[in-house]
Image (cartoon, rainbow, N blue to C red; front, side, top):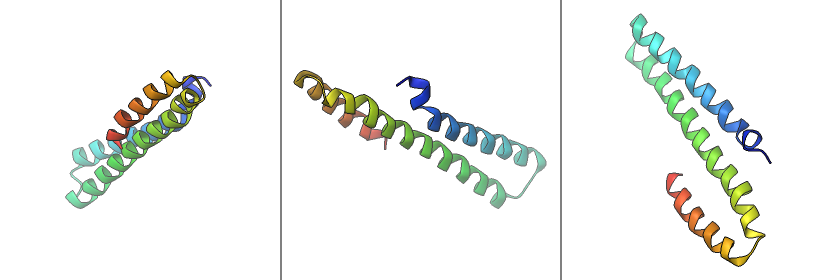
Length: 89
């Protein structure tokens, strides 16, 4: 599987976050209410969080999953990498 194919969901979510952030900046420049801006910032955070979660899950499914089917040395490395990447969930 090509990296770009595996990360299409991440790209989609980051583009969504980018759109929310652009809207937030415009709202600030327009002098919109703090409540509206805060709601928009929440959307930015959620979109970025979803992108991160998708990236980690893709990595677990594709990269670490294939290592588990290989030699035992790779399995140990995959387990170590899994421990490391789950810190970011």
